[in-house]
Length: 212
Ligand SMILES: Nc1nc2c(c(=O)[nH]1)N[C@H]1C(S)=C(S)[C@@H](COP(=O)(O)O)O[C@H]1N2
Ligand SMILES: [Mo]
Image 1: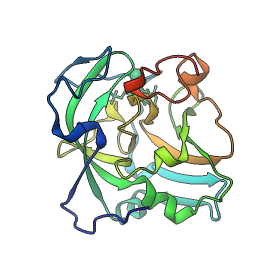
Image 2: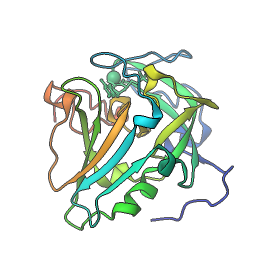
Image 3: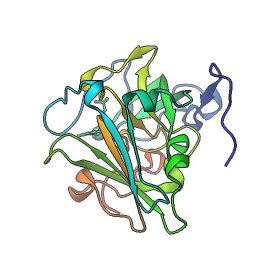
Image 4: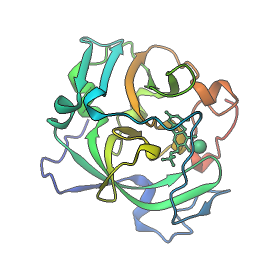
């Protein structure tokens, strides 16, 4: 893995920016651009007091880790510029997210060699355990983070405060809002939308919207 920039202010450019190509070149097939940021989720908006929030990393790891809000914020921060592509056909270009890189978090727990996939858990519907699945290697790309801020402002509750996951190269549903857990597994187990017909992988450039 390449090392993280130690300069706080260095901004990581996601591959979604495609070498700063034109907006058209950056828009995957079947998507329309919006400058608004739509709100989409299953169930009610979670309103989480950061004092009550924690993140647990478990499953196929050397060491299970639980971080509270203060411990999370003591970790090195990154800024990532990326485009967002939602499976419901909207794309929003040029977002700036700030938070903790997923690889920084997983380095604390040390995934075992058998770990191949990640299941993100969120304290939202259904049953306070909304989930989404993805390959471990894509979850630890350098443009992936657990974000607390968007375009310089703290996330609002409806966008997943206090912490939500961002995986820019996959459709936006592969990032849990109100994230509470990262589970490492040795199999690709479908999450909430995946059980309901959404794609196991979700690459916007291949229009992996539904099915396997
Ligand atoms: N906890 C949780 N996270 C979620 C979802 C959800 O239903 N619950 N929906 C996903 C989907 S389908 C999308 S498109 C994005 C929407 O994020 P936004 O509301 O910030 O645009 O969140 C994703 N993360
Ligand atoms: Mo979505």
